[in-house]
Picture 1 (cartoon, rainbow, N blue to C red):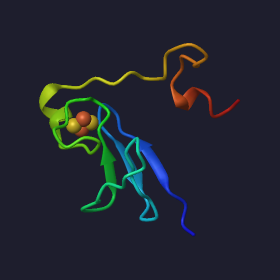
Picture 2: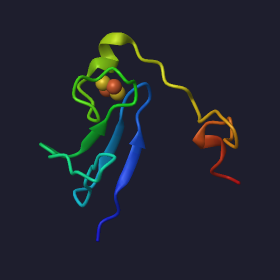
Picture 3: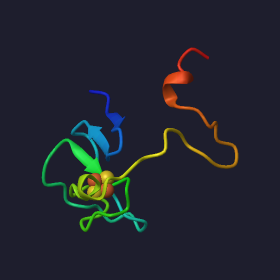
Picture 4: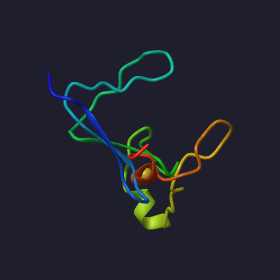
Length: 83
Ligand code: FES
């Protein structure tokens, strides 16, 4: 089985590389996937959520460099590889 990889695109979507992936809603209903790789919206602006429709480029979406919140490490992923 090929490993699925999730790429966090700089100022863009989550790109899911792998074909053994399904996207389901909160009730477990599966979305139909038109093409691979899958890009999931991270900016909140897509009209085809949960999929990216390119709106992030038009709005100038600027992503946070790292997760921020209770219990989260406030560092970019590249700084945590050597730990
Ligand atoms: S990340 Fe592309 S439309 Fe939101």
